[in-house]
Amino acid sequence: MRRFRIADQVIEEAVSNLQAVLADAYQRKIRPLCLCREPGAAMYIARVGDHYIVKRMPSSGGGHDPSCSSYDPPDELSGLGMLMGSA
Image (cartoon, rainbow, N blue to C red):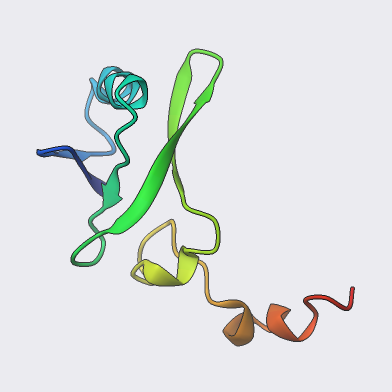
């Protein structure tokens, strides 16, 4: 389960008030940090209707721990690097 630092608060993804915390951070333009690694990987909050979702920053998947659901191997390790720009 992912944990985030939002301002000075550490919060787990499964807490009951997550949407309220994310809505407040979204309004205040606070970027969460994913705590899968130290010092934390920058994330952002997306609003879809009245629902808030924590997403990884573009091209930052390799900065997360491999056990984190936000992890995405770098293009050069996944085989995608060889295809970029030629597909």
